[in-house]
Image (tube, rainbow, N blue to C red; front, side, top):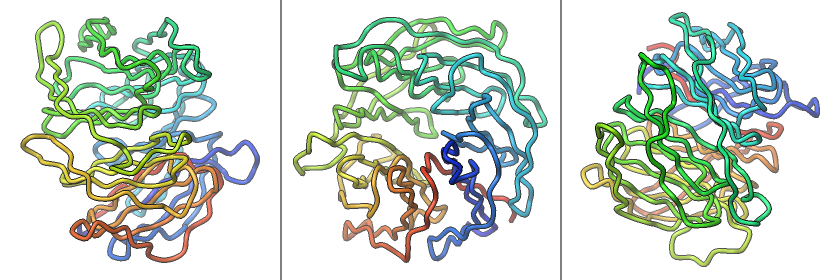
Length: 352
């Protein structure tokens, strides 16, 4: 918890009102961001940091862009790599920062690129285009890859596709460096599986459905040919309250201690907070409250787990809240920060 932290927010830049990445100093005790500077990158739709905290990666129109994160929190551009597809919507790295996985919403493609030891992005290792049709609903009629992650055991890559309502499971080993389809989770029609996250122990993963507005909890065990996956819970993204027709689950984050889960809901413009049992993996609803913004496209959990920031895409704001888990409250702490069409945020520890 002690140390210096920075926040990096990726935004669309096509209308000239944002440069792409905004850099903030983080006041952990107060749960606030302090604006520092901007870095130019075309239409930063997702940002992540490497596991060692030394490199920042952003999706941009040109592909994946890497930045060195310095001890004072400043970033300098390293390189960029073309993904030979349309601009992506999600990034992830594996535990050892060997590969970066790019999800292509617009072209239904999942791309794997090698990462170099210095943090720069290397060559494309493999890529797969999803095929098939979903329902006749407007956004669910063709593949839209929305989340790709390597499983914690390193044996598989899972790819959520909210267009065809499936999570495809590929075998991936570092000798072949090829994605080999071995299984798929076939989700309910028009449920739109948007994103998923694993617990750090690799025993559970959480799958968020954009249109069905639930989180499915699965147990996970590694397997020789394919993983052993079992659904153990389904829980609403808005709690017991009735859903409006406009509600769309839009973001999901675990707290750093993994004792809580946060889910953002567009349309409702709320954040839902859950308790999480680390032994069973199960979620327990605490509260669902407004975020004083529109379309919480991402949620940023502060390192103390006592504060969150809601990244509100539609109205161009970041709003800040203290979390009272016992009373089930989100308490707004100070004024919003304005930023044009923000998409995602990552907090990084830069020095002790």
